[in-house]
Image 1 (cartoon, rainbow, N blue to C red):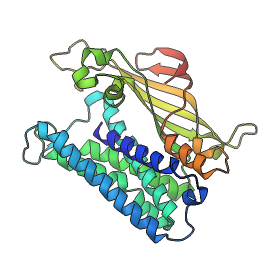
Image 2 (image 1 turned 90 degrees about the vertical axis):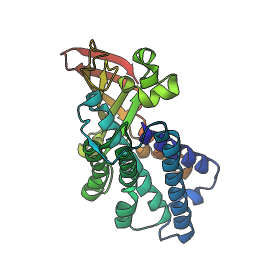
Image 3 (image 1 turned 135 degrees about the vertical axis):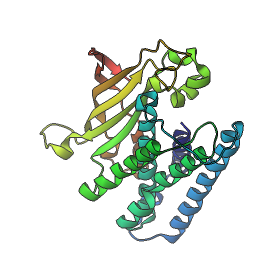
Image 4 (image 1 turned 180 degrees about the vertical axis):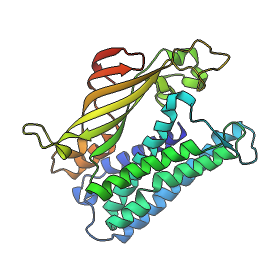
Length: 300
């Protein structure tokens, strides 16, 4: 949840900055290294990361006792929804970092080395802070998920020089949050970040990048989603909540890759890129681990 707060902060600042500029020339990536842009990006990213880490330390960790550095094994919690959150956060922060350096005009190699690793570096810092908290601990499974998210971005750039498969997110409200608002969120904004029952993570694959099918728009994707339901705690055998009906859910749907919509407006291209983290609602087929199949006419 802490990681997604940082992504939202970065998206809001990016969107605000771009929307205030009506000049496509400003938004056009530089062909060569633009030193003033580079300096602005470095200062902005360092400032945002510092503010976020200091804010977490004061507003999040200060409520819990400090401890000696320790590790934990939390790989079985929340039906791995929290781990997918780490994969998603690392991927998206890396994508934003690389795209920003592309705008600056640095080489493709440096975009991957210094930009796509933005998420991994930031999330590693948070994980270390967890390690010194009595409430949590350094999680190797979290770190594996962070590396996987960065690897998904870097691997595709090395293999295809483009992102044929993107990680996306969708959310709908559930009744579980009302049962445990302290843990799952009190109100829509908190639930969006904390209620794993309403979250779905998607692998959205561009159809024409793999199969050239006549008549299929270049922006149309096939999306495979994973979610979970029935969770009031991370642990399935929590003595305070013994009757949890925890269910894994698998989804098949269509999606739109907003970055592949053709437009001559650099402003629109930037907006499409910022909001491409969200899965576009479509009719969706659901299969859960209880063997039940369900059709959603529109799924969020």
